[in-house]
Structures are given as C-alpha cells and as structure tokens.
Image 1 (cartoon, rainbow, N blue to C red):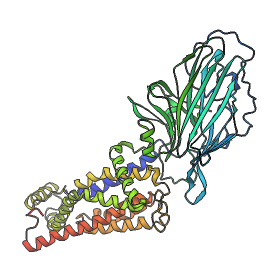
Image 2: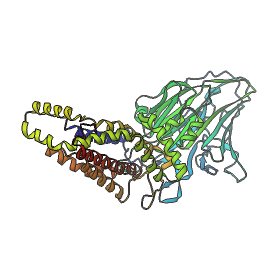
Image 3: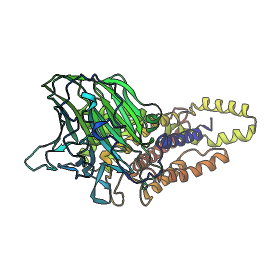
Image 4: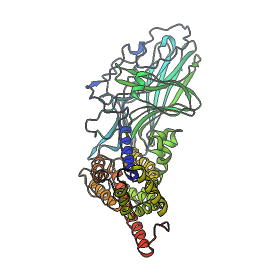
Length: 565
C-alpha cells in the first residue's frame, strides 16, 4: 500500500508519455521534400488527368460533332498570370488551368508570431507543403468536359473587395466547338472563409449529355524545419457523414487503401494544426468520397464526385458546392455544416474538451486575455474538484501523521512482506485511513488535464496569443524556461507536504521527479504549463491548509484520524 503514491506519479508520467505518443503516432515529421512546381497532367483538355477521380464512366450519347472538341481557350495558362482575389480576410490566387485555387493567404493570421508583415499561407502551388483546391467535370461527348486540367478564360484577372461591397464574384469560362460551355464561379464574401462555388454546364449540342462534377483537395505532407520535434498534430484527410461521423484518412491510409464510400450530407477535408480546407457538397445529394495517392505517392488527394446528371439538349445545369478554407474557428465551423467543428480534433476526450473550451472562451470574452482566462479557468476547475481534493489531502495528512508508526512496523517485520502487509492493513483499519484515498481523487482529475491539454494545443483562438511580460505566445514553449522552472519548484514544495516514502529508493525517485517534469514541461505550450503551475500553487495552498487542520485536531483531541479527519 505504501507504493500507491509512487504508482500514481508513474501513472501520471505514463499519461504524459501517451500524450507525446499521440503527437507522433502516424504523423511524425516527414523528410524534407525537394523543391518542385505543380505540373499539369499530360493530355491537356483531351484526356482525363491521372489525378482526377476514377469515377464510373457515364453514358456518352452519339451526337454529330461539329468540328474539334478542344477548348477555345489558349494552351498557355500555365505561364499566364494567376487571377488575384482580395477580400478583407483572404488573398487568393486562382489559376486559369482548371480554375484551381492555388494560393491562399489568411490576412488576419501571421505566418510567424514575430513577423506581422507575413500573413499565413494555407494553400500553396509548389513543394514543400503543396496544397491546392481543384474541381472539374467528368463526362460529355467522348469525355470532353473540362477537368481541373482544362484551360479556362477568366472574365478579369484581379478582384478587390471595395469598402462598400460585401461580395466578389469570380467567373471563368470554357467552351468547345461542339456546343458545350462551362462557367465556373467563385463567390467570396466579406469577413468569411466560406466560398460559394459552382460549375454551370450549358448544353448547346443536339443531344443530352451525362455529367458528374467533382471537387478535391491535393496536398503533400507538412514540412516545417523550424517546428519543435515535441509538437506534432494531425495533418491529413478527414471526412464526415451522418452515419460514419468523423473519420480520419491519414496519408498512410490513402497510400495503402484508398477511400471508396458513398455518403449524403457529408464533407471532405484536409486539415492541419489550426487550419483546414473542406469541400462541402450540397445537402440531400448522394456523393462518392474517394482518396488517391499520385506523383509516386508523394501527393495525396481526398475528394467527392456526384452521381451522373443528364442535361437535355438546349438546357443547362449548375453544380453547387461550398469551400471552406481558413482557421478552425469552432463557432463558425458549427454553423457551416454538421460535424465540421469536429475538425478541431480533441481526440477521444472531445466530450470533456468542448465544454472546457466553451468555458475558456466565455472567460476570455470577459477578461480579454487568454493567459488570465487560463488562470481563472484553473481556479474554477480546482473549485469544482475541491471536495475530491480535500478527501485526497486529508488522507495524505493522516498518512503523514502515521509515518513513524509505519516505519516502526517495517523495522519490526523486516523482509516478511506477508506479515508487514497484514500489519499495515490492521493499522489502516484501526486508524480508519484509506491508503487509496490520496490517489483515486487525483486519478479522476487526469482526464480533465488531458482534455485541457488538447484545448490549449488545438484551439486556433489561442494561436500566438500573448499573456504578460516575456510570455508573448501561449501556444509555444516558454522561450526562457522561467515558467517550467516555477512549475518544477512548486512540484518540489508539494512533495514536501506529502508523507515521505519509507523506501529509500522511492525517496530518491520522488526527489528526481520535479527535475524530470521540469524538463518535460519545458517543451510544452506555455499555456499548458501556466495551467499546471497555477494548479500546483492552488494545490499547495489547499494541502497546507488541510494538513494544518488535521495536525491541530490531532494535537487538541489526540485522535483526529479516529474521528475521520
């Protein structure tokens, strides 16, 4: 029984190790990729590119072709200047080839905390960290409708949201000599990261055509040479459906077993730490979700394509969808599509993490500083667990009071473990002390600690958030290691309030633990270390107060422990 406190500490250390394992599990830092640019698939407009979805062929009615089926646009789109779109929150570059959104900067988010002039770039057309948004059509006579490799003609090459405007409409067109015309549109809105997308097919041929639309996201593995080896979060594909809920498709999964499911009212996305891009098909329309690895397995795709839709001769049809590309702001994501807020990945403790974040966000709205919000949240959590902690500290205080008697029993029975344990049980029963009472209440609180860890790690609202003095970024480790040192010192003081272990080896292990935890926490986000430090300081205050009460009761009545103190 005297080993229970050691087991508790080791259990906590194991939990911290599991957290670290969760960082690196399946998502370790990839090797540095070579520099290259995104090249179009061979075949231009006349062939389906290799990175388009392998959808079932649609029936191609026999029609009289009027001349060439090639697009009337030129073939120099790869060298043409991209279409620039600027709103109050986004700066996007759209390629004439396929209408691909090849670059996207988030103007309200910095690339680096110490460089306010560089906005964060989410989408990028080159490696390393290639990440682009593609869409296209499949079908038509001889499969000639424009895929994401077709060349479009833009209506303009620059769009800027004026102060008196609330939206921008970007149009690109494609047509061929057979009488097929496609207009691709993107609608950007003020203050929003949600983009309305559509592909209108105008059939001016002499027969109906059968068409599918598709949307996909392509990216390489995330590479950041400046990122700490202790900070790893999930980067990869995810999808959602009402039946399957939230599912991950890691890059390894995409390479080994491509996704092949049919879902209604779902979405597909590529997520990374704090940010994401997601295609959201129209509700009520069955979609086929797919993944594939291309370019020798170095690029990964997740996407969705629709059922074949027949467009009569002389008619038109518009395929509608939505694209979200921006920060994982939970309140906004929840409003856009069911389950989209699950992209803020709190893991298996989401049920605890979401209310913790809600409370933390509510406190921040009052105090205006995330550091103070963490401190107030810590106090509230400590208050919620006050009774459990009180039980734990009373048990520890009573155990501390019994230390001389425990040592005497060890001296009496020596190596006779059976008699020693029997004597311990008789002593605990006589004094009405539960040796597990100091451990179990603390174990109950460990899931809350893990949930808060994921809240502080995953919430983009805290990204680059300053606190006070040198703590100018709560999502990064303390640059001067001052807070981890304070945490280690508080842990050492807290140990001194606990009953010393009778075993000399255990005593040495306990003496080393503050140093070990200080080193470990030196690589944690400073917001989490702030929580742990404040929690320790509150625990020290509470434990000192309860221990003092137990000792006073014992001194006055001579039987504090017998009275259940």
